[in-house]
Amino acid sequence: MSVTLQAEPFDPGALLTAFAAGRAETGAIASFTGLARAEQGTTTTLELEAYPGFTDAAIAEMVAAAVGRFGLQDALVVHRIGPIAPGEAIVFVATAAAHRRAAFEACDHLMDWLKSRAPFWKKEVGPGGARWIEPTQQDRTDAARWDGDPK
Amino acid sequence: MARVLLFGRLADIAGWRERDVAAGTLSELRATLAALDPDLAEALSGPSVQVAVDKALLRGEATLSATSEVAFLPPMSGG
Figure 1 (spheres, rainbow over the protein chains, first blue to last red):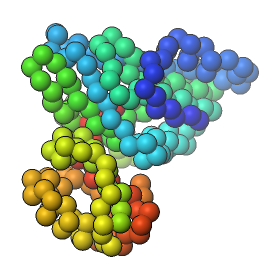
Figure 2: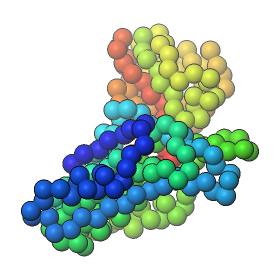
Figure 3: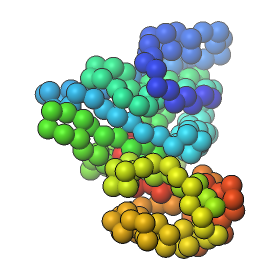
């Protein structure tokens, strides 16, 4: 299990290759890469603020919960902080399991929780000024899919 | 004395994101900040602002030491 917050850009392909290496008992790896959108030119920079030691601990708890719930062999989360340009990767999640269903579902679940519950503060900066972002109703609805009976 | 950290829009309102404040409890700290900046104090008292002392969320009062770190967390954006 690994959680990294970093200001530097990352290469999702390289992360996936490294995550997949040397796994004789893993039958399935699912991954997700989130990119920063330009929002039709209204956003020139996304600024992501984290609380070091608090944000990474909260994400590590989410990852540990997902590992337990879905029986994962391993999971990786890499998240950018600081200024991010449109088109750059902002988040990378990879999950490893014996079989594909667990890997897919855990990756989906982790992204829903990251989008709705991870302690980041996100500001969209564009020609019209800057505004702080909160989770959308869709983000909350997506995350709520995982509430209730654990599978 | 405690180290105060502000995040998100709270830092925009205050014009700073980190400073040391002399206070023995959380309520003393709030009172000191209120005397310095009423706008910030109002923003900090909102129901959507969470407080973490030494990186643990808490509600209500807390005793602060010289090395305490008090973070005010506005609604989180998610990743």
